[in-house]
Amino acid sequence: MTITPSTAEVDAARLLLDRMGITPEDLLTAPVERPAIPTFREYIPTVSAAVTAGTRRAYGSYWNRITQHWGDRRLDEPTPSQIKQLVETIRSNVVVRRNARGGRSAAEHLIAALRCIYRHAVDDGLIDEGANPAKKVAKPRRLPSTRRAVADTRLAEINEIAGTTGDDPAL
Image (cartoon, rainbow, N blue to C red; front, side):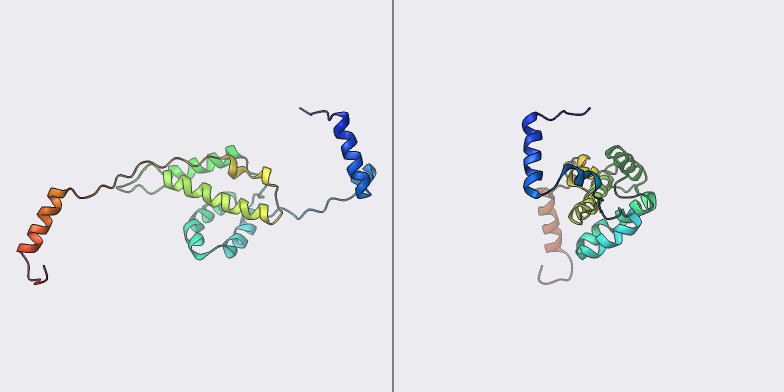
């Protein structure tokens, strides 16, 4: 679907081009020099070197997974749907622990790691802000914490036992 510009918009464009000293033919014949879009395998080390150690520690394993799955793909190739597919692949392969929550954190961190890559790609002029597919994928909402405080009665029992038994005189 193409939108036909109004006469006023065309006139405004002509006026702007005229003031810039550019003819419409110049636009058609001028070569567009854009940097080549790198692959994930080529670009992730650049991003990794540009971030803090904490960010590298948080996203490093997810960048490794992105490289494993999409290493030879250019940054401008994945779509939001493909990102969602990768998220589900990573989510389904998480290590299940006692406090597991269905891979929600893995999904959240993978999307955050992709957003970090694409934020740097936008800043480096490799892609346009509107072409950032990671921005179009919602992070999963965090579930309420399962951690709870020790009940007052239980804490009183712990203090009672610690104070009446053992060899530590400070207790």
